[in-house]
Image 1 (spheres, rainbow, N blue to C red):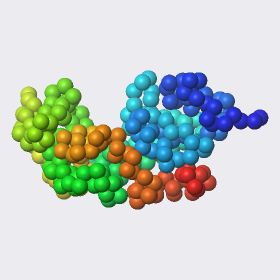
Image 2: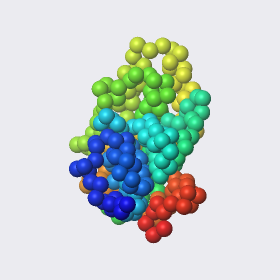
Image 3: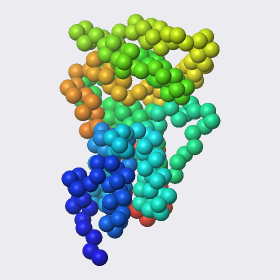
Image 4: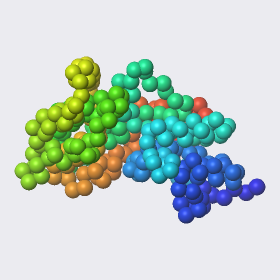
Length: 279
């Protein structure tokens, strides 16, 4: 049987659900390689590193929802159906703080930093590119770090303890910005702390303080939420459309410096698969 080119399997004739799309491809006897990432912005970041003639990069959409858990679920489901041409890439998130420890999932690889945005910002090559647009960007990144790291600690605690706090509803990141003066509002951290522990116990606060000690010992890029960091940096920087510009600065040479790239390359070599352009 002559297989149709991968490009012919268009969005128009795929199910919106990624699992459905993969099953459709398998059932049509197309031996496609699949890379599952969390959401559409991640697709834009990662897809440029891979040859579109060889594989599909798709978000983790299941019933219109996307998450790191969905990445793991999709990869695990397909592997258990004896189709091994699939890998997943997910954000590191809070895995370093989980008790019991996070168990790596087969064929699923994690970002070096908390998320891909922080991985990009941690790259010297990326910062050099940003500096061409804003000569003071390094100092502005330093100015963002303390606030973003503090917020990140609350987010990690909220995640691993299933604390139930809604940042979007109770204290949006915009509360930390003064867009007229182009400065960050430190006092918003007091508001966050008060709101976060409203109606909670002293034991909850003690548990948080214990986590905070661990967070304080770690690099900022493992703690800060990338979306928070970019939203705060955007208030200070003079780079138009910073969020969209950042991935443009993250090229293959920068990606190759990451442990994530090494993990993916090792998987590809051991499975005789060509993942990347030029390989």
